[in-house]
Amino acid sequence: MNLDLTGRTALVGGSSQGIGRAVAIELARLGAQVVLAARDETRLAETARSLPSPTGAHHRWMAADFAQPTRVAEAVDDLLASGTLATDTIHILVNNTGGPPGGAVLAADPGAFRATFEQHLVVNQLLAQRLVPGMRAAGWGRIVNIISTSVKAPLPNLGVSNTIRAAVASWAKTLATELAPAGITVNNVLPGATRTGRLEAIIGSRAHTTGRPLDDVEAEMRREVPMGRFAEPHEVAAAVAFLASPAAAYITGINLPVDGGRLPVL
Image 1: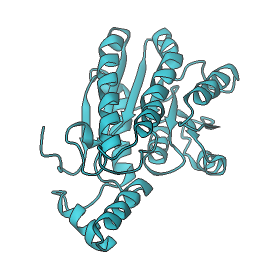
Image 2: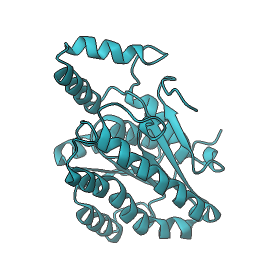
Image 3: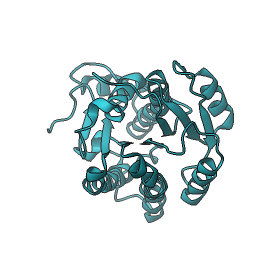
Image 4: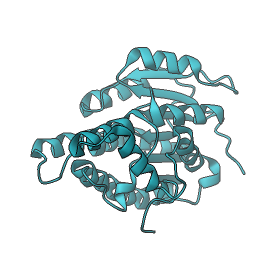
């Protein structure tokens, strides 16, 4: 199986921690030059220094707040014009950013929907508009969106997240159809409960809402997973890396759950 990413450059969002960081590590391990993107410059610099480089790739990072789509777009424009990348093209785009706070959909402020739409879908659109021309010119490209299993089965008390992530999935499927003739694939990875800061926040929110101990809430969530445990970030990263690789050239427009079998639907 050809998983070799030598000579490819990848931009990974939210890559200073959690799933994004694990994805960056896996892509670097497969030979890609990785550009990290997140808000925390200290963490970004530390992560960039720690990435493997089996092919001698020089990894880079850019500070970007995904809540400000225009600033993210400007940062990418600056990066492409800087001459610091191994090639003139970013071949792999991994869209990944933190989710909104939990809560019932009816109680959500309309502004929360607008802000989350900007952070998740508008940023993705601006990045695709900047990077797809280079992918077209190369005749090769991969866009992988890290979303949520809520795309297939909405999750309790995550009203805003459920709504906007479904919009991202529809955007991705539409884009996959448009870009398939150019040799560019667009796919979604749907993590289930994964050991990250986001999961800790969800457990804390449920405990606060129900008045139950944290350990009880966590145990209940584990029981919902047939494998009886939460995913580790590197397990989600493995799915992303496969979809970004040459081996996945004929796979596009899919939603790939990585959830230990928890989804009740296909």
